[in-house]
Length: 116
Image (tube, helix red, strand yellow):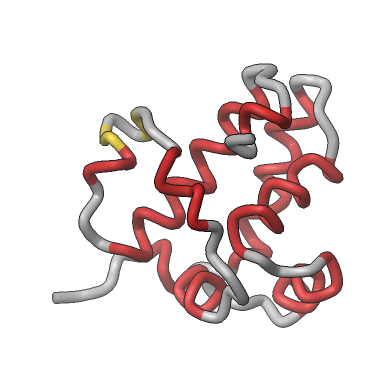
């Protein structure tokens, strides 16, 4: 079976859309980066290296230093599908990130977004 197209897309090509979505709602690039670092365990420098290297989504999540164990607390619907019900691991990680960015754009506090 062929891989989903998003797996081979570079994370850097989607990243500006995350920032634009957040900034349209009065949030910041720093908050987007904090969410990504919380989810993946990348440091800011490592995140910037992944962006510079045009790393694809599959590699981005596969090489993540420490996927946050609290990410399983992320619940809800994204693109009509419940994130907690997605069986394919990489797709679920991508949708976790999408859900967190949506929560940021909807005005949720960072404390709630980061499941503290």
